[in-house]
Image 1 (tube, rainbow, N blue to C red):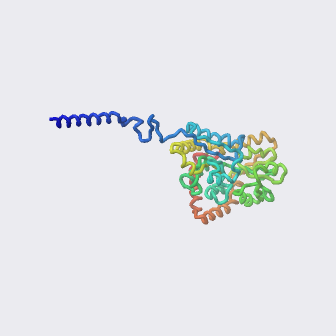
Image 2 (cartoon, rainbow, N blue to C red):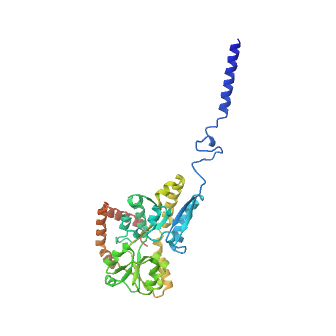
Image 3 (cartoon, rainbow, N blue to C red):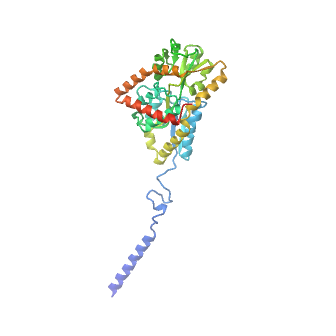
Length: 367
């Protein structure tokens, strides 16, 4: 009898302990029951850490590019992240000068940079294909082609990068001390240009001259060079129209620039911040950066004409424009062949670009 009572008491005690243990277990739907939560219910898949991204650009505070693209994009990303991303800015090339941004991003000197493929030789071969004399006049349409070249065509030159704002310049401009209205007018001219435009100047009969951006204004003023090829935005910001009386519209030429970051740095960020950067940059591309240059042709000329009453804006008629474009066809063919030597099907890439442009120019015609 005593053994039976003892056994019953033991069973009652075990049952009591089991019930007590069950009552202290958190409910399945409780935040504190999540494997990623702390005792106060906070989800640890997100953190409150502020991630500083070093941003390097050659653009200064007063430049149109900085005021309308660089700064608004950074502020949009900071706002979308609720302050968890903070940009530390180095402007005016103080951290990385023209042609140094690519290495600076890859070696960690900066995390994000404003850059131009034309500043490098052999680094961005497919992007430079967009800069050949293809006769494209709409900067907005070609910006979309550039976007697709990166994300759809998957140009391998961007494998280590995450591009936030790809942009094409729209028509370029020859700012000169002498009127240039025909191919013959190029003969003997000393023209300041970058490496990708040097062959273009030669094909048209001029002599390309390389010099730093800071030297151009004085060189034009003192007739050390006869002119230079620029985007309307950079021409306006640098005020070359103050010392030159002629601007020839080169609507067959485009240039590419972009804002990008290191893929390694991007991958080191929490997944939700990666998505914020990607989504915010795309929205900004659609609303702003893809349109930036196309809005500057008329705006740039209006600024120039107000500052210099002697300025003459030379717009080529269709026949002359076609003649100048045809003069560049050999350069394009040669460049396409050079892509083949890099293991890139140049003809296929050119056809893809032409087809894409014809699609987008219907949506975003030249202004």
